[in-house]
Length: 272
Image 1 (cartoon, helix red, strand yellow):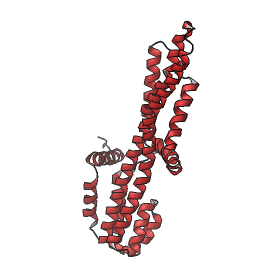
Image 2 (cartoon, one colour; image 1 turned 180 degrees about the vertical axis):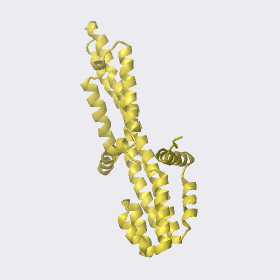
Image 3 (cartoon, helix red, strand yellow; image 1 turned 30 degrees about the vertical axis):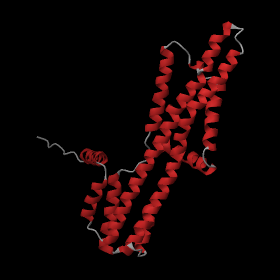
Image 4 (cartoon, helix red, strand yellow; image 1 turned 180 degrees about the horizontal axis):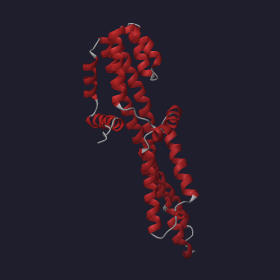
């Protein structure tokens, strides 16, 4: 689990509440039901109206992934593919059918099954590239839904403020209540901006980033599987896949692996 989104949103709202407290105000001053209902309800409604019901359903299903999304270390994938290459060189490509039953990833499992069935390399590449494109398109649709909500929310907030100010103008004969009423009127604009920049846009960007990471992962597995089918030497295959990994990710995975090894094998001091 990568809690980056959850941590960021909590810190953002924490900074907001800290400012309110420092200003000497109260959180209840912005927790007004009417503008919150309008901003959140109308924003989600126009988001649904701007797409299809299937887009909305995909976005709702993808929402937990924005907070609980997992990323697989590239080195783990490379080690797995190299192991499959060694198995193929020692036992033949038909042995990959048994290995496919042990693989939990449906993308890699399907690739290994096609290799064992004797699918042509060019046809297999087209098949895997189409699958990558389809999955990426679906995840990008979910990300776009929340990004679109981030665009609608500020405008919906302004609409709420205009409605409230209209109500204020109807009560100009009671000057003692104008101050609180005007303050309450701007809460709708506040929640429009808050929801856009603290919720919808971060969630949309997070889902888009997870989509990019998933596409990179599947591309790495595709190139590895095709190389295994072509009979590539395992060590050279590992080096080739390492070259496909971004430098920062490769260093992070390597450093973590070395840290575990150094922590697990500490030399014992001999007694004098």
